[in-house]
Image 1 (cartoon, rainbow, N blue to C red):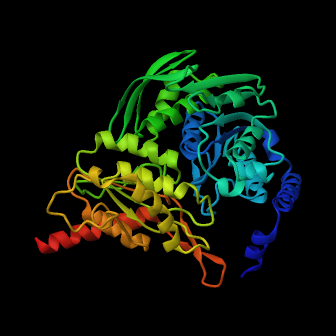
Image 2: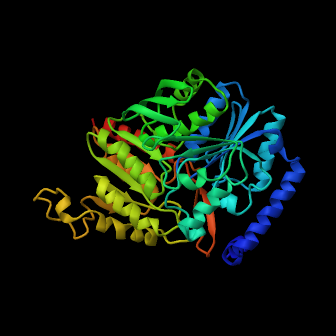
Amino acid sequence: MTIKSLFRSYASPNLIRTGHKFQAMLANAYYGFPSRRLRIVGVTGTNGKTTTSHLIGAILQRAGYETAIASTVAFQIGDQKETNVLNMTTPSPWVLQGFLAKAVRAGAHMAVVETTSHAIDQERVWGIHYDIVVLTNLTHDHLDYHKTFEAYRQAKLRLFAHRPRVAVVNTDDASAGQFLALPASQQITYGIEAKALVTARKMLVEPSATLFTVVTPIGQIAINLALPGRFNVANALAAIAVGVSQGIGLETIKQALESVTVVPGRMERVDVGQDFVVLIDYAHTPDAFEQIYATLKPVTKGRLIHVFGATGDRDRTKRPIMGALAARSADYTILTSDEPYSEEPEKIIEEIIEGLKRGRTKSELRIKNSELRMTESGEGVWWERITDRKAAIARALELGKKDDVVIITGMGDERWMTIGDGQGGIQRVPWNERRIVKDLLLARFQRKQTAD
């Protein structure tokens, strides 16, 4: 066992918090408190943080602000982008303060910082003055760390507790009232179902895009968003709310949003000419699964094939829930390894299977009478397990036929996979899901051409 893993095992939350805060104080002092020379936009929530951050960045850039973005997938200053290979959404204080200082030197006016509950609770963002704060949503996640949903919510609330200049809140979320109860110089609400200042009307959801009309206090305009799903409309509304708070016109906002064709690893399509759709996404929570199924099921003409696992050393309570959701909505499910960390991948899969078995009854299977080989659990008929992730993806792509949709979730744009090292510790191995999927699809085409 490494010294680092020993520290993680025995250090108390208070000790970890104190250590991070001390590092944040040193980093701020060393770099000269760079956030004081920037207008900081903090984006927090369970799902949608990355997409929302990049949509906000696009709007600010289009409006003429030199903008920096620190997100799960990238560190970007203006047009210069560097992939985030740290496997961490909100990085250490030294990395984050160094990035903000670099943004200041580059002449940036604003910085969008994707901010997690861990980073808030551990004081990793100490010293950053957030001018604008955004809540995407608050759903089941990270209970391995926070223990209770209320503690998780309290961590998020802390981002809004210092009277920001602008607070942007999703009124469709059940916790919206608690966030709106905190004082802010200006509050802008957004939502699709609940009453809000920024809302969407006339939504038309298509397999690869969404057309909607946004209604705001300064007018309304039609937007053709090249990102599918109602959840991406919600992400866009959050970004629009930020734009409106900065006095940016709707035509500029429209141009910015329509220029974003993809957010890496977020409902990202991988296409080499196959006659079925392949998507990779970072989804790893029950709510994210529900959103994906709600988006894809109505527009999938063939089968919906889902490949997923669950992260190790993290919230175990969500694993059977994700399994049950897959059983109810996916036509075929392949369970595999995600990032197991120090856990055994097979044990993680077994915990997902607990929910998978309960999620679909035999009467719901709609299996032909000839398929009497079905096991009691349905394994081998409507789901299977393949621990090796690359092999699981290959299997899904081989199953894919015309009009099917293959969705692969959990890793998104991550460039490293964290696994056990066989000695009680962990190690990181290179991983590029986009490249793996593309290579497997090309190999399939080559085999088909050879056979023909």
